[in-house]
Image (cartoon, rainbow, N blue to C red; front, side, top):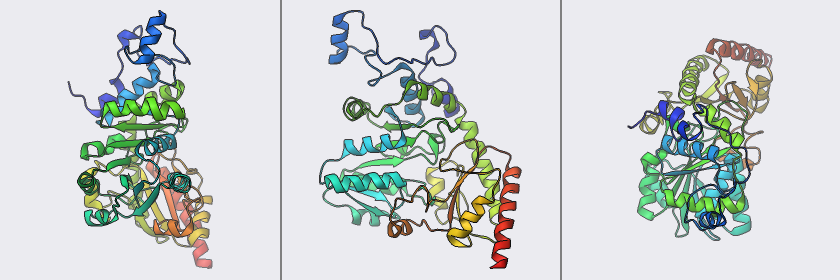
Length: 399
C-alpha cells in the first residue's frame, strides 16, 4: 500500500513487533554489538551477513530515520550525518577528485562556500557560481572537467529559485551528477529526486527536526548500492555519523513535519501580505508570491512556499540592525525551521565569511533580512513586526 507523506513520517521503517511492541522507536544508545559466534562476526565484516557491527557503521535507531527519509524524498537509500555540513562535504568528497570542477547555483550557504574554497585551495577542485536561469546559461558554464552540479533552491538567503528541470536536462546531456540542498523546503514541499536529481541533502537541524535541539544532516540518493558505498567509504572513514539520540529526536520531530509545514506556510503568507503594506520594506522575496518573477518555477517544483521570507529594509545595515534590535517576540538567531520565529542579518551572520564582491553578486546586501516564520499566532508576529517598524519609521523621519 502506497502511503501519503503524512503517514510515512509516522510509520515508515519501523515494525514494533520486532521491538517488544514499543510504540515509540527505541533509543539504541550503544557503541557496539555482540556476535553469537566468531563466524558471525567474520561474516558481518565481510558483508556476507547483514546485521549490526558498530554504531559508526549503523545503528537501529538511526536506520529507522534513514528509511523514513528515503521514502519521504522518494529515493533508494540515505545516510544520516552529524551535521548538514557533514552531508555536504561527504557527497562532494564522494563525487570529486583533484582537478575536477563543480558548477554551483549563484547563492549558497556561507559554510558551503567556505568548503568549496578549501577544496579549491588544497586540491585544485574549482567551482563556478552562476544564476542557472536557463539551460543555455548552464550549458555555457559546463567545462570538460565538470563532474557535478550543486544547487540550492530556494537559495539561502535570497529565496531565488533554480529551475531543477533545466539543471537536470543539461546534466543528463553531459553525464553530470546533480546534488540539491533541499533544506529550505523540506521533503514535504519539494522532491528533487522525482525531477531527476541524483542526490538530495538536508540540514536536518532545520525543518526535519523542527524544535531547535539537534544538529544533524541527511543525504538521500537515487541508487541504494551507491549510498551503501558512501556509507562504507566516506562516512565510515571520515566518521561524520549521527548519534542515536539525535536520530531519536529527529524521528520524533519528523512525525509533525506535515502539520508544521502547513502552519509555517500559513503564517508566512499572512506576513507577506502585512509586509507589502510597509513603507520601510523595499523588496520581498518569497517563492509563492504571485508578484515573484519566478512564481511559475515555484509552482512547477514546489507544492507550497514554506516558512522563509527574505526582505530588504530602508537604511542599509544600520536600519536592518536597528529593526532587529527593536523586535521582542521574534528572536535574533541564525537557524530556521524552529517553532520560534527567528530573524537574522545574512551579510554579517550566516554569509559573513563570503567576500563582499561574491556576497553582493549573490544578492546579499547590507539591507537584507531573513525571517524564519515560526508556529506562533500570526497576529502576535505582526504586532511585534509593527512595533519594530514604528521605530524604524521614526528613525527615517529624523534622518
